[in-house]
Image 1: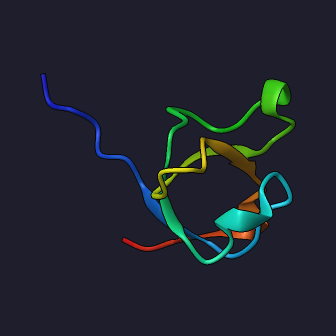
Image 2: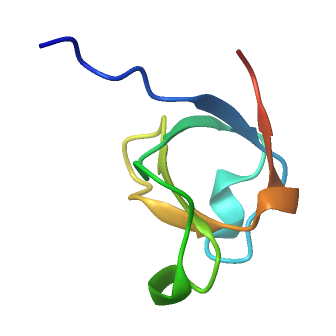
Length: 64
């Protein structure tokens, strides 16, 4: 079974963790965000000291 490709994004800003601004990451969600995350995307940041964060659609931009 082929592994689903995750969407790579650049984090413009993030209210959840300000340190993530300017970094890249991958969207973890398999579907559109729902009420549990208040409509925010779960993003795994490409940085060792920053865990997964929640970002609004306006706070991220796709790279690929």
